[in-house]
Amino acid sequence: MTRRHLLSALPAVALATPPPGIRLGGPIFLKSTDPVEFAREHKRLGYGAAYCPTVPLADAARVEKAFAVENVILAEVGAWKNMLDPDPAARAANLAYVQERLALADAVGARCCVDIAGSFNPKVWYGPHKDNLSPRFYDATVENVRKVLDAVKPKRTKFALEIMGWSAPDSATSYLKLIKAIDRPAFGVHIDVCNAVNSPALFYNNAALTDDLFKRLSRWIVSCHAKDLAWLPEMNVHYVEVIPGRGEIDYQAYLRAIHKYAPQAPLMLEHLKTAGEYLEGATYIRKMAAAAQVPLFS
Image 1 (cartoon, rainbow, N blue to C red):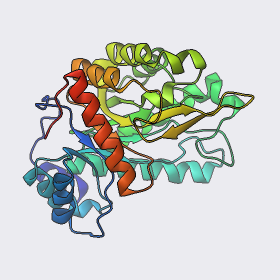
Image 2 (image 1 turned 30 degrees about the horizontal axis):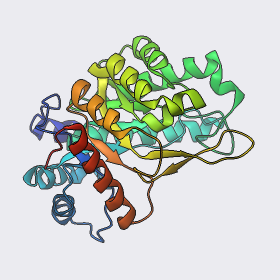
Image 3 (image 1 turned 180 degrees about the horizontal axis):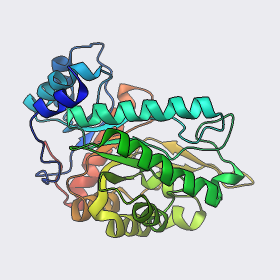
């Protein structure tokens, strides 16, 4: 079965329909390749959203059905390849992989396929580089996103770039500029407030930063990441990611912004090490949602 025939056989998914509450999700640690068991484990943990499991395109309908039965939405298919790799062969291979991941996201009805714009850094695929702040970076990113979207032509999902602190998109302003330049309806917005914090002013005023991001980008937001930031005292600015609740991110402001401006966007825990750490983070977010009087899906 070709990808075109597979997609045409799948039911339409109303991605824009707001849920009765924000859907929280995160990685799970179940040792299984059965999508039915995988979906049930999300339900058991109280998650209303999930990262798409690693499956071949041919299994998309089976995966979608398993999660639909448990009323757990598929939030994201991660691509996580450097679309700006300085090596031409590696860059071409990475772009092909991103297209495959976007096709999978469309096939399973995920809210988005997400990547970062990439980096010209030859050693660290997401690392800093002076040319990441140049017009060349911006123009190449516009071209890459158009190339990915035009190759796949997704009908049920969006392709989004995660905000980064040292390359575009790094703010609501730079994201809006990219949206206008890329000019494709299937291009969406992915919010990670922690990644947008790149100065002491934004660190201590992250509630205002959050409100600005959501207010200005609301109509395009498809998914969000949940983590926290702490400041490690050194002779220069050094933030570290920590479990939600152990840092300075204002989660009541974050949850209120999602609920007000993008209630259809799931909030996905990431970058923690153990099931216990994810439980701690989820418990804290649920506590903050109750304090902020923001409904969570359950």
